[in-house]
Length: 274
Figure 1 (cartoon, rainbow, N blue to C red):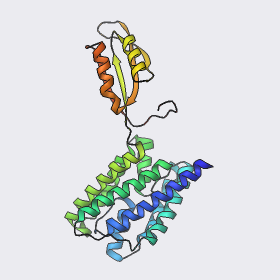
Figure 2 (spheres, rainbow, N blue to C red):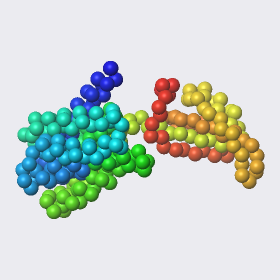
Figure 3 (cartoon, rainbow, N blue to C red):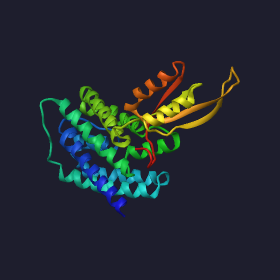
Figure 4 (cartoon, rainbow, N blue to C red):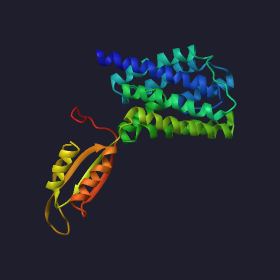
């Protein structure tokens, strides 16, 4: 119950940040946005139709389309987002931040948008619209959610050129890029991890030093050299990014000829990884 309460609170916060991004910075700067949000903003520019109402209507239709591709919890949380975001869009309608520098709106619009959607996705929901399409692409095509979202959003943004002009469209793309990076940080965290594969004849010494000095558990993988046809043990360990330099010094201090492979890790799901 506490988990659901926390996740619902996160969706509420994310919806509020989303509304701030749209009303306070994007519309105030006469910029566009991707996905359904971009469509609602263009409709607002053309016909003065409230984004809060159009957000509710269009996202409801897309949710019906995405129903079969999403699990029930995600659907429930997405419905909650649609309701709260429409409410907050209505409440913050007059909160426009009007500046002489459109890049202020671009930067902060991207930050608030990325933070809002990131919090919602991390809670297990989606921001509906193109995020539903991004979730489907992630599930079946194994695309990164953030960049799948960017792809679908760009389609709408480029089309908005006829309404906001080329210059504002280009600025909007910068805002989308900022939102994507912020969303990545919100979903994956700032404390990035690295997975390390070490091939060395002195694997025992290396494992002992890494385990003792960095306090990381290692896995020994059995392998065989193709040319030498020799059996050998391969070390595998996951560390924090800031521990990489220290680990390299340990390995190179023991075996200068060691073969070290470094991979980026999106996330580590383990209670034992601290």
